[in-house]
Image (cartoon, rainbow, N blue to C red; front, side):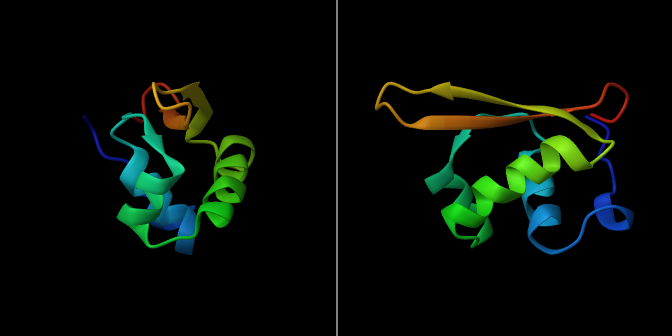
Length: 81
């Protein structure tokens, strides 16, 4: 996978989330918190921003896992994954 350098369009928490999620794996908020050190409420807010405010993310997929927890997957814009 070609890595996108987000340093010129993302900073702070959004950059951390992008870097962790650019592998397109589904993760729960708890898993993302563990990987990034960002609180779950901030992760949720930053995912909404990533989805709507960046030209490199076409969407965020969401599904429920077997435990009933939501998992999230970053979908990069074609050509940036």
